[in-house]
Length: 183
Image (cartoon, rainbow, N blue to C red; front, side):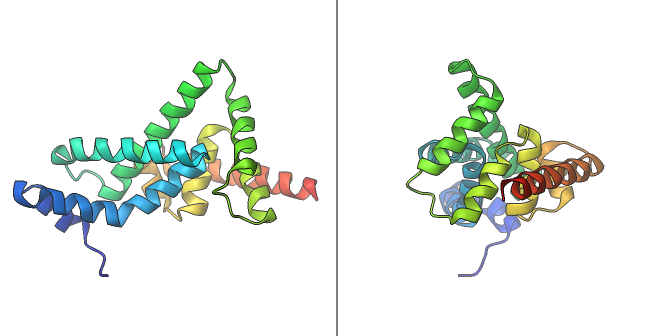
C-alpha cells in the first residue's frame, strides 16, 4: 500500500467530511512507530498501549490547530515523548522512588515482559540503555532505534543539534562501556 503524504493527511483532516479518513491514514502511517518509540521509554506493553492512545487522542484534538511549523512526524513524536516523560515522572512520584529506581524497575519488567522476544544481546543493549539518564536515553532511542536525524530530534526535544550530538556520543560511550565490562 502506498504511503500517504502528510500534506494530504492534513488537507483531508481540514475537511469535516474526510476528517475520520485522514485520521485513519495518520494512524496507519505513524501508530507502529509511535508504539515502539514509547515502548522503548516505558518498557511495559500495557503502559505503552495506554500512552499511544493518549498520544493519538491529543493528536486528534490538536491536529486542527497544527501550523506546519514543524513536520507532522516530529510533532507527533514530541507529543508521544512528553506523554512518556509525564508518565515516568508520575510513576516516580507515585511510588516515591528516584529515576534510577524507575530505570531499575523498567529493566526488571523488560526481562519479565511476555511481549519481549529479543535475544540475549538485545536484552543486554536494552538494559544498558535503561542505565542512561532520561534525556540521553530518549536521544539514544530516537537516533539509534528510530533512525531520526539530529534536526528532527532537535524539533522534538527543543535542544540544539550540537547538544544532541554530544549527548548521543556520551550515551554511546556509556553503553559501550557497560556492554564491554559485562563480558
